[in-house]
Image (cartoon, rainbow, N blue to C red):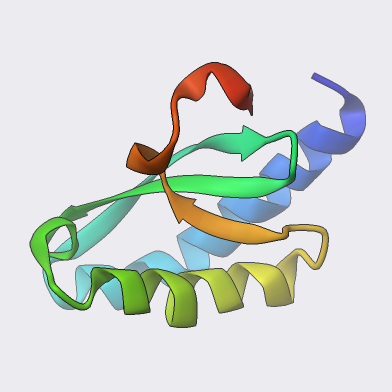
Length: 90
């Protein structure tokens, strides 16, 4: 993994840690899964967020916006279940 990707991954993880209390307040959480070649962050929503009908909105309007503000290089935040792990950079 390149130094650029390592630095980006650290910024993303810091942003996730800053946003995480918002999910935990409602009994949810998220697991960071990786960044793919298109600079999309892959997450898995867990706890109450994993089964919530508003999970997609939370992911797009909350988590994605927060991460993109902190890391403009990120193109999208997606649920990990949407793709296999073979395209992800670890």
